[in-house]
Length: 231
Image (cartoon, rainbow, N blue to C red; front, side):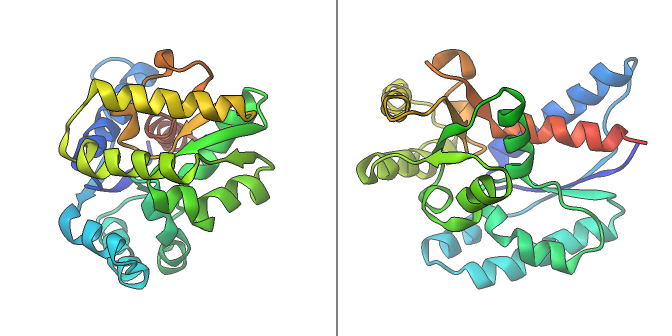
């Protein structure tokens, strides 16, 4: 079994889900008392969030490179960044380490294509929805058509993530708002929706949605299990 490296804490709520899903996946595959061989470095999210709001992406890249190097030095065979938004730093991280990075957008795109879909909505932080690093990878590398919500809806999705989900707050009214936004994306042609923030599955589950929902936390964790068990 390969050793899975995780850079998490962005936030710790979804990172706890990563740990649970990966260990559960390994036990399901191997049986008995098996669990994952993994190394987790969980960062303090407060300075990360502050730099995000200040558009301090160069500083965040340096921060994430150092975190990734710590995980590599600890003995990981490959790396996961346990947050969609922080994949904006993925090119810098990949350039700085010698172990592979399992990119969350690649794992998600593979699942979408396996289901035969081509047009998907994307929910996430405003950085993930509006910046090019995520949408461009889905569109240019994987041939998907990606729809994002209207400006007002994007602001609502973003605010719920930072003001509620990042603090473990689950609001039924926010769930209703998200489902309404997903309905609007469907009306514009979305065949499925990417839950493109690893906190969103705390609020929205696949069974809630009128179209297939792609839980990036679960997809990323499942891909990590596959990588760990490959020969």
